[in-house]
Every structure is written in structure tokens, then in C-alpha cells.
Amino acid sequence: MDQSFLIMLSNLLHLHNHLDPTNSLLSDTSSAAYSSDVSSPASLLTSTSAAPLLFFTLASVLSYLASNSPKKPSSPSSSSSKPPSEFSVAAFRALSTERIWAMEAPLRDAQWRSLYGLSYPVFTTVVDKLKPYITQSQLSLPSDYAVAMVLSRLSHGLSLKTLASRYALEPYLISKITNMVTRLLATKLYPEFIKIPVSRRRLVENTQGFQELTSLPNICGAVDSTPVKLHKLSPDVINGSMYYCKYGFPSILLQVVADSKKVFWDVCVKAPGGYDDSTHFRDSLLYNRLISGDIVWDKVVNVRGQHVRPYIVGDWCFPLLSFLLTPFSYSRTGNPAQNAFDEALMKGRKTVEEAIGLLKGRWKILQDLNVGLNHAPQTIVACCVLHNLCQIAREPEPELWKEPEENGQPPKVLENEKSFHYYGESLRQALADDLYQRLSSR
Image (cartoon, rainbow, N blue to C red; front, side):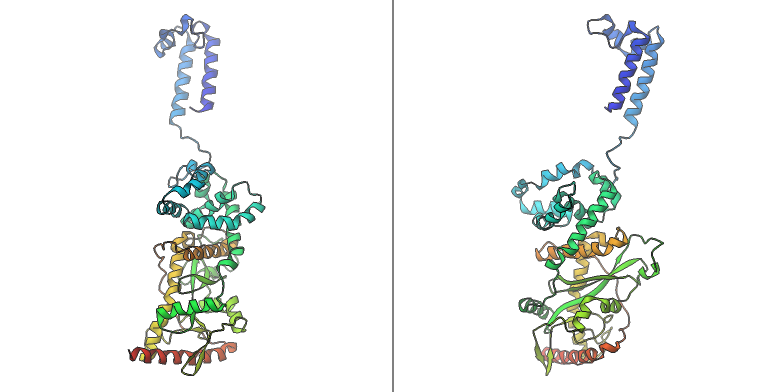
């Protein structure tokens, strides 16, 4: 029973004794006044004094209010969320102690994925890598608990209000912790888990993986862009119309390059959703490093007299360059060799489509990004880092998020790109002729 109700009831009892001491309800048990006929509701109703009736009436009203008024929780709760106690530090600690290793691994990891989007071993990896930085921040919550809370938000797309209800914390604190953990993932863990493949070993792994998929030599990655929908866009955002993508919703544009295992090796988030893919690509650090020769991929194959260095593949929305090959046509209207090349290239490009589908399927916050615009890029990059952790650990792949079908015209070639474009044309034709000859001879 509510403590405040007990206090009020006690005060009423003392008031009753003061008004009618002959029928005291607080008298000693040896007194005749404590007999069943006196202490019962019936005796109070038949008393000649007004005090018992006053007491009984007020007590009944208070009892009714106490039993029928909604219980006020420690923080507002959502009808769709579990009781806050299930998400307390104590409840989390009971799950995450060393005893969890005694559980059957499939059961343990299935439970952890349903809560936080990844298995327990991968979760502990994330915590171990972030703990030193979180400890430095002097956060009042345990590091693993804070990481778990943020992962639950990223994996389920929960709002601040819902998460505050689940964890019995103020929304501003949830926001602060989310910003801290996503920033650490996007800065401290990014260099370790998202790397351009420049070493000989990684180049060979990447190109062999794509060759098995496409029969094309020396593909080292597939590039694509996707709009990440913003939950809402503040009306005071400068040039707010630039955030509306071609599908009609406010968004931020994400560009990724993936390998044949759907692991991202480059991520760029620096344009509003209204930008086209080619403009975003040309603004990226990857483009500038490739066109300036800063990235040297030391693996060359000879195809019909052409020296073919490792290259990435993209759809017709990207520019055709020596280091980025695109299809001959949108609807396979070329000659047989060109159509065969287009079909093979799109098989390679499908890996990045599926990687984006996994990213948004696994981290549902990216389906409707409910964070402030200033923190949106780091949240997106943080999810990309977590995606790579899951792919490297071979976590089960969730249902793919389906992207809308793309169409559009090839971008114009810029003046500084002309030599790269012409060389890309000759490379593409040589690869197409070589592939068609190999396919015809089978």
C-alpha cells in the first residue's frame, strides 16, 4: 500500500480518538473497545458519535482512491515497452555476469540479439574497446550498461521517450549517452573496422571474392548510396529543401563501398538527401584520394593489352572512370559482349545493395533516424561500424531492408575527369570482350 495513504489513515485514526475516545480504534488489545463489535465497520456505523462515521467515510474514500488511481511509476512508461525493472542495472547485471557463459550459446546469443542486435561475444568486444573512453568520461552508469542501452536504441529504433521509460532515466541523459557511444564508435573504432584494402593480402581476398561472383578480374569493391530517412527536420534548418531526397522524405545521403562479404571498407556521410549520387561521390575523400593517385592498388592484371588495376563498380548514377566502372546501359540495350559485362557487373554491385539492406535491417534506427541533425552523421557511421563487426563475426543476417528501385541518367564527365573517363571506357570494353569470349568458349 502507498506510504502516503498509510500516513493519512494514521492521522484519521488519531483524529477519531481525539473526537471520540470512548470508541478508540488505537486502544490496547486488552480494552473492551478493541472487541470485534467495536472495531468492525458495522459498529462504526451504529455508533452514537459522529466521529466514527466521519472516520469511516473518509477512510473509505481514501481507500477507493488509492486502489483505483493509476500507480505512478518512477518514470513514464510506454504501453509497448517492458517494465523498467526488467531493464535496471541489477537486471542487466544478472544477465551479463560470467554465469551467462554457462548458458547454451545459441540460446544466450539469440536472447542478446533480440535485445541489443548482436551476440554476447560481439557485445563484449564492443564494450571492451569502448570501456576505457567511457570510463574517462566519468559516466555515472556502468560502461557495459550504457553500451547496451545505446545498442537497444540503435537495433530497435527506439525513441528517447521510450528508452527513458524502459531504463528509468531522464531523456536528456539517454541523449547524452547515445551521443557519446555513437561518437566513440564513429571515431575510435572506425579506423580499426573500416579500412581501404591497400595491403596485398586484402586486395587478393577482395578481388578473388568478386571474381567468384562475377567472373570479372580485379574488382575490389562495389559502391552505392542510400538516403537515411530523418524522423523530422526542424523548420529552422538552412536550405531545408536540400534534405528531401528523390523519394520525397527528408534524409541524409550515405555512401558506402563494400567487399564481396558485404563488409564496408569506406563510408561517407557528408551530403543532404537531395544530392545526387555522383555529386556526393565527387565530394568524398575516397574520390579525391583515387583521382589524385594517393591510393595505390599494387595488383595489375593484363586484359587484351590493357593494364587493369583494382577498381570498384557502381550503377549508372556514378561516373565512368578508370577506377570506377559502370554498366554500358540501363536496360541491357548494348551488344552481346556489353550485355554480358553489364550482367556480371551488376552481380558484383548486388553485394553493396545487400550490405545496405543488412545495415538497415539490423540497425532499425536507420529506417527512421530519430536523433538531432547534428548527431545524425555519427549515428549512421556508428551503425556501419557495428555492421562490420557483425559481418566479420559472421552473425546471422536479418531480413534485408528493401531499397526503392533506382533510375536516372549517367552523370556528365567533368573536365578534370576526361582522361580517367576515356581510359575507363577502354578498360570496360576490353573486360567485356574478354568475358564474352570466355563465356562463349565454355
